[in-house]
Image (spheres, rainbow, N blue to C red):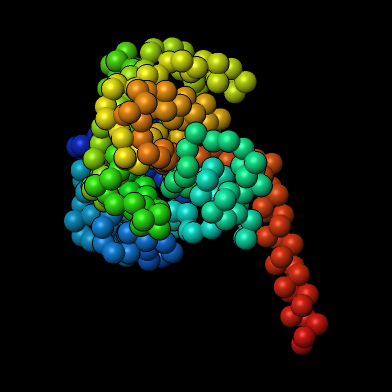
Length: 316
């Protein structure tokens, strides 16, 4: 995973004397307090994080000015910066890569259509950038459990839609978080993937199972991308849980090279034959974007916009 180098500080519950909110470049007097365009289909049904229009209240102002609240709730932060989760068609359903219009279908996209993958479907919340990058890192490195659960609820909305489209009932699915080793859990003070999984369960109702064990090796973030696959190879094992007949959703926070997710899915499929899952899915809060692919999609959008403008001029 990419290393988030900006120092992170967990908000303090009380600050005295009162101090203004640290400058973040946002003039809250002129903020558009409307909700983002979309935060997942299940969110529209009221099943996930409340993302109704954010209204500034007198109590909210007291919390900021007198109690030292430096980080609003996730829904409010999303509304402030205009962030939204992926809409249908913005990511490949097979590999979760960003795609253009009509570039992917149920069989995948050009990047994965000819590849054999250990998962049948992949669900993501968005690209590892901007607000999503910030909140994932705050959860992971400041032991912010509530924030992790809120991220999971948003991811759960995306996953609920995917399960419904695939005709998979919640009772026939299981969530298996990618495990955190004991030493890393002690170092960070949180099993952040488990926190995210709880939020997903809140929305989907899918059972969470500790289905994998993991050996302690060097952190993936400390290694170059070319060494990450070898670093995790053989480090995970299935716990012996009976997954037969179930759709198992392997869940992680961020996918960069995909090495950790590949090893986790393969570990489940290496388990005892009679207990192997019927199908394995992958799910992450964020996918690290491919810069070259991002530039290509941006160029294509700009080209389409200019072509539309030219067509309108011709018609006029």
